[in-house]
Length: 122
Image 1 (cartoon, rainbow, N blue to C red):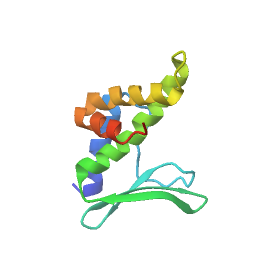
Image 2: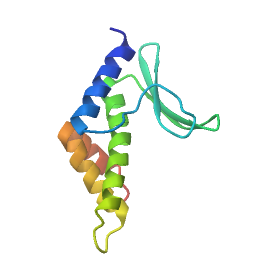
Image 3: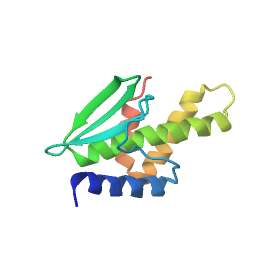
């Protein structure tokens, strides 16, 4: 199994575990949607492009780290959609979404929820 095939299988398992309708994949749609490139080594690059220009890119050689980054993207999308449908009175939607994302990440790995929490603005 190639590194990309292994990663694809792991991403699909995470998608199913979360009940997500999508997962970060390997195709560049050029609309700011994140995707993964598997480079020699392997090195994993999570990136997004819009109108042919990179929006962001980050690289790692750690499989767990690319899985976290991809899952973070998906759970943020899921959490924000949930927050819109479940507003909390007198609370900004982003804070509701932060909590929901942490709940989702905890189902995969509690350390991922802690990592997300530590990266949040105060």
